[in-house]
Length: 443
Image (cartoon, rainbow, N blue to C red; front, side):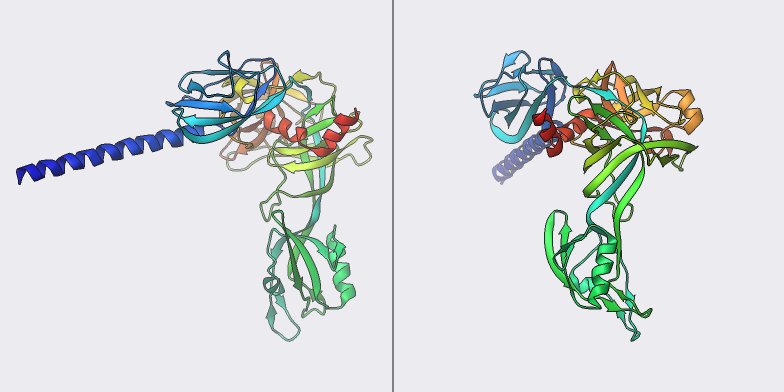
């Protein structure tokens, strides 16, 4: 009996030990997986430093021959081992994209990391406010509402059609719709006939039909609240004099009702003028109030609305791009906690430089508009605006002579603090826009 009890105790200890080992391994696996980003950006010809502080040993292999070096050692197609608790220096002298396959402890495959080697780019930091106009690609359904028919019944034709808020109507009866009026005109001319609708729902195209209801006011209605455009004031972040590309806002333009990024059919930025400032206070965000300069000779064409800003081309920079000198960009590996400054136009008298402090850097964030926490330390700006206000989004963040990011959001409970986005995310977007690529090839 004692022997059996001893054997059972030994088994229980073995199971407990195995459980602890498995749990420890799982913790290390998860920590390493989320510590190492899916993408790394480095500048060709320069050492870029990273410190993941992950207590694991990894092995990695490249997908092709490359001049990439890790801590001065060339990466070759066979496995290279690294201790992620130690700082890591990455270098390549050739602009390229290299895929690295990572293995935990050099044995267990667990992640693929894309290293993009970018040329050392210089852009003009801007900081001036611009007017932004966007026409959506299709007509956005922002809400639905019941219809009271002439017979006293309540109808919801959108439910039968499978239509919901956030969908874009891109065709009605085979005709492309670019405005709310297009849909109203087709519906009125049909006098209540069933409409063939083509929707775009998060990139998936859906065909359906909907029959207008004759409402109690004598008009045919679909029960849909529609929006085809939006406009506002924002800040121009940078202008690339080589490609004539621009980035602005630092965050995407989302519909206020459905909360999703607007798709862009066409859009433009144009000159603006600040007329007043609503000062920010705890619990109440402030705002720059401005007007568009409709007769401005220079405008920019918006080609993309993304999570990290709006992007496009400015064919003629006069009157819309300030005369600042071009400076090199700084990648997230070069951003550090400490003093920096922003360029912004809050007074309407032109751009000025204001001191800030970068308080926290989220180096492993992926294409997020919240890459760093910043605090306004310049008393001039605090006295005038209370800190960060709406309309300042896109103000360039400069540290050590490099453009490292853009202001994106304010913390509602502390208007002196907010978030910034890494400039590398914004540069990545302009590198991927077909219109900008075409211009670069033509040039």
